[in-house]
Length: 129
Image 1 (cartoon, one colour):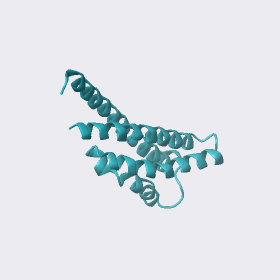
Image 2 (cartoon, helix red, strand yellow):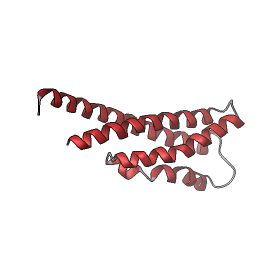
Image 3 (tube, helix red, strand yellow):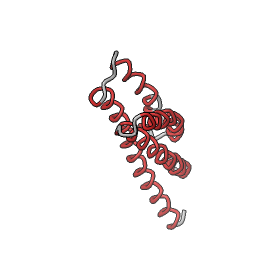
Image 4 (cartoon, one colour):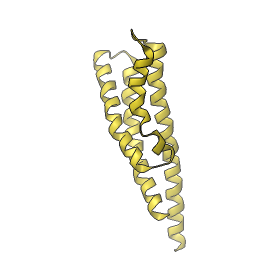
């Protein structure tokens, strides 16, 4: 392996590590935004626990693979994020002054984009190792 390839490998590893930390940060941010809306900002009538479970269980499905830096789990996360994005957009269209809809749509859109980069870069790192 040439010196140039080693530098490219190290750069890709650093890029993948950075985008992974960004992915996980946005993942936690989305979960916290959902929790804040349900428990503090706009508590719904009925069981908060049931609503929290309905909101967070789909988000936690790819978590085990994400913690292991599995690109396939990040791909599943992208599919799941479509529902959160749609929910945020519908919330914004119903109540444009509500911060929650904007946060949900924005964070899910950012997380989708960052997850795609993670899939690409981590897949390259996995192939090189």
